[in-house]
Image (tube, rainbow, N blue to C red; front, side, top):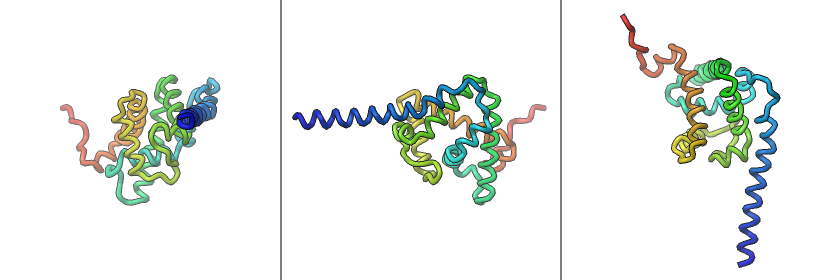
Length: 174
C-alpha cells in the first residue's frame, strides 16, 4: 500500500512540476511588456502553428495544387495579422496569450495535442481542434472558436475564396 501512495504522489508531483514549468516558461510572454501586440509580428512568430491550424480547419476549401494551397495559406495568415490589428487591445492580448500557450509543448499536451507544429500531421491537428470544440470545458471551447474565427474569418473575407467553395456571394440588394 505504501508504494502505491508514494507512486501516486510521485506522479502528482511530476504533473504539477510540468504545469509549473510550463507556467514559468509562458508567464513572461503572458505578462508582456505593456506594448501593443502587432498582428504581423504575432503571425510571424507563430507561423507554423497558424499554417497547420489553417490547413486542418479549411481542408478541402483550400486549392488542391500545392503551390496554390501554400499561397492561399500565406494570404490567410496575412489576413489574420490584419484582423488581429483591428481587434481591441485586450482581445489582441488574449490572442497573443493563446498562441503563446499553444507554442509550449507541455501546455499543448495538457490541451490534447503533444506534437510539434513544424511537421504536424494535419489529421491529428484537426482531431485536436474538434476535441477542443466538443470539450465540456469552456476555456477549451473558447480556444477552438478563437482559432476557428481567426482562420475562417480571414479566409472567407476575400471574395476570391468563395468560388473555391461554391458560394455565390451575398445576396445583391436592388
